[in-house]
Length: 171
Image (cartoon, rainbow, N blue to C red; front, side, top):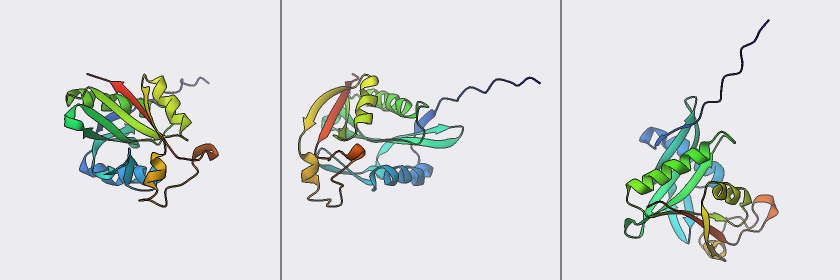
């Protein structure tokens, strides 16, 4: 008996967030950050109200990304990036969509922050050509004044105190 070879893995499809995606995006935010309110560089965002993108694989929600426009529209910030599926290109496809959106808005720079405990994310971004641009030492400690439930210990038992900024110049 012969068997057919396994079907190739389908790459993710990415499209802008629409109203019907709201529940899935909120679910991503709550699962990954415990809130729809996200802090970056000392600023609070209602991430479930931001523009962004969703990724799907075989018609199922696979991840989301939210984006904010800043400083006279010359730079965009990725506020959140969540992938429900590892090693299928979801995060990479969402980042490419964000970079293209930044270009279409006339942004010269796209950037994001991650906390100092998230070494997996830092590796991920560097592999995609993003570069370290700043260390915001102690900024998470200052945010805890407003959000006392922000955890002190994060991934791999590392204390969270700082935000690492990474960037990519797109324009």
